[in-house]
Picture (tube, rainbow, N blue to C red):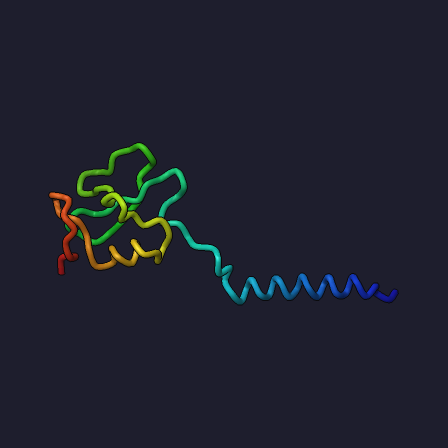
Length: 98
């Protein structure tokens, strides 16, 4: 049975849309550093980051990011900023120990 021209165009358009999404990797989407009900934390005097449940205190050796310098998405401005820095026991931003 012959296909209706509109059906063929719709199928072609859908296939093109799916292909475009696969090729761009969903360009507008960014992976979050933590789940929405968590806050990111930073290792004190060491490399590393993690997440704690919102409202909970970080474990010893961990602290919250300084206000205004909290990464939200992977590879965002603050995620890149902290790639070679950490905080010391006094909360000062310092280079990562080598």
